[in-house]
Length: 316
Image (cartoon, rainbow, N blue to C red; front, side):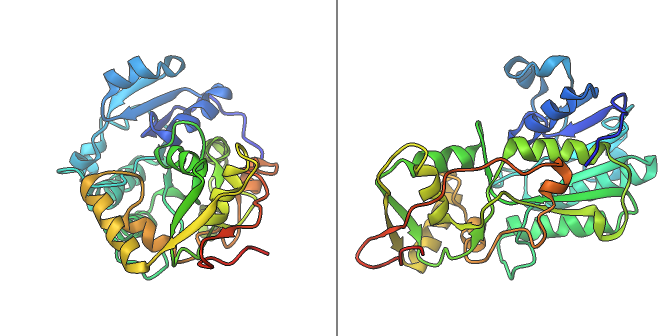
């Protein structure tokens, strides 16, 4: 996908100091595009991530719940990329506010000002899920479609890369000699490199406007694997011997997900527990289309799994 020669358009990257946002900012700056980074703590982030002279603006989604409240935030920007998301709720930062109501207000404001809006969502929202995290993501997508804005929705599968909370945990767990997994984690994921995602979003933001279904992009990596197979592939980068995999009963895994949500420990959540039961891969992977090349490899070809007490079947 060819990026047009228009690097002078100023792009506001909401969540631009986060895991995804940092890579979007880097990709935009690589083509000379002026960038504004939206952050909850701009002064702190400016010290931690100088970001090549990019401007910082304070953004608190839990307070930006009507189109008018976005007026000053969007000042002098031509394109908006929303990379903001929360794994767990904290005070006024609720799923509905951050994933639904604020993006709906943002989309209305972009429609009124004629601004492009790229919104990062998630795969798996069509499944019969109950978690507030996933339902709020689905509500946010619906609000964009109804907004009348020039919008695009990007839905990546699981991400790998330096600096990500979940990616860091998976890399750590992959090194362990035993991998403990939910018994019903049969769904496949198409893990992609976060650098590819950042580049793809930047290219999409600078590309000509699209219409209809062409505005929704499911993105994934080269391989469709279960979580167990992904852990084995990541372990292969660091250890010769495969790990043993131990499956825990469904009810125990569900209870563990609620405990992790309650105590805010590990990336494992009730929403993740639900997603692991279904395939979380693009029906049509548009990542190569956006990149104009094949995505990066994540992990290595997974060896056969070593079951514990016959719990898991070896892969073929």
